[in-house]
Length: 407
Image (cartoon, rainbow, N blue to C red; front, side, top):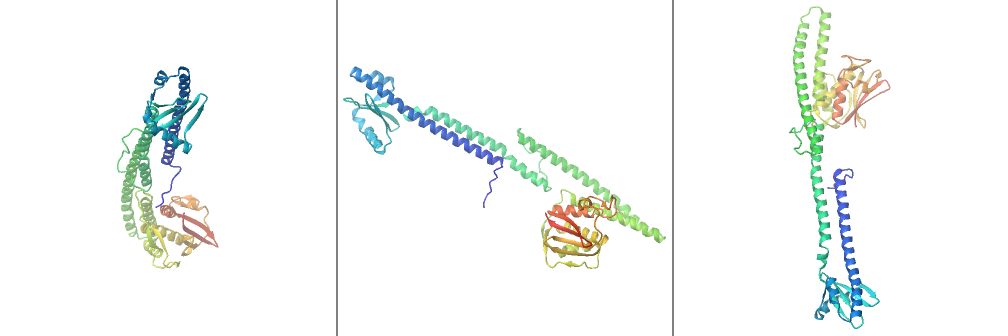
C-alpha cells in the first residue's frame, strides 16, 4: 500500500526540520573533529621545529621542552610499528609531511595516538603525545553528543505534544458525520492543543444537548398537533353542508400533510440521521415513492435495471416529493435515468425564480407561504446533499426538468 506524503502536514515539517537540524549538527561535529585533528598535527610540526632548534643549540635531547609539550620519548625498540605505519601512509600518499629548514619531521597517527618522528641529520627521535585521540576530543564529542540528545528530546516532546491533533481531527470528522465524542474532556494537559480540544468537546456536547432538547420539543409538538388535526378530519365528515365539509376536509388534509412534511424535515436534517448507502434499484425507489403517494396508476419511465448508491428510506422520500411536485405543477410526468443522473420531466411553465429560491423552506411562487412547493423541494435538496448529489433544474421545450446529479 502506497502512503502519500502530505508536505503541508505539521508532522512532515517537524520531521524535515529535525532531520535537517540533526544532519547539520552531525556535519558540524565531524568538521570540528577533523579541524581539531588537523590543528593537533600542525601544532606537533611547530613543536618539532622548536625541538630541532633546541637540539642544534645544546647538542643534547631537549628533555625539558619535551615534557613541556606533553610528549613522551618512545624507546627505539618500539619504533618499528610506528615507522611501518609511516611507510604505509607514504605509499598511500595520506601522510602529513612538512619539510623543515632545520631538518624533517613527520606526524604519524597510530593506535589512537599521534607520534612525532623527528629525523634531521645525525639525530632521530620518536615522540608520542601523552593524551590519546579520544582524550583530546572528549570535550568536543561530549558537547556535540549533548546537542544531539537535546535535539532528539525536543523532537520527541514536540511530536508527543502534537500527536493528539490527529485524534482531534478524527473526532471533528466524526462529529461532522453526526457522531459525538464519548467524553466531555479531550485532554488533561495544559497546552494549547488541549485547550482547543477541550473547547471543541465542550461545544460538541452542548450542541448535542441542544439538539436533543429541540428534537424532544418538536416531537412533542407533532404529537400534540396530530391529535386535533385527526379529530378535525373526523368532525369534518359529520358536517352536512357539502361545501363546508369539502373546505374543512381540504384544510385539515393540508395541515396533516404539512405536519408530515415537517416530521420528514426534522428527521432528515437531524445530525443524528445516519444514512446506510448501498446499491438499490431505481425502479424499487419509484415503486416505494408511488406507495407513499398512494398512486395506483404507473409512471412512464425510461429505466430498466439501473442502480444507484443510496439510503433507500430517505431517497424514496426524495423521489416521492419530486413525483408529487411534477404531478401537482405539471403534466405527463416521466422519469429517465442517464448520464445526467435521475431526471424527472413534466410539461409545465418555467419557474419564476432560480432553483436556489425553491429549495428554501416553504418557498412558493412569489411569497413564502404554506402553499405551493412548501417543504417538498427543500427536503429533496437536503436528501441530495446527504447523498453527495446536487438538485438541478432547467426548462426546455415547455418541460420542467429536475435532475439529481453527482456533485
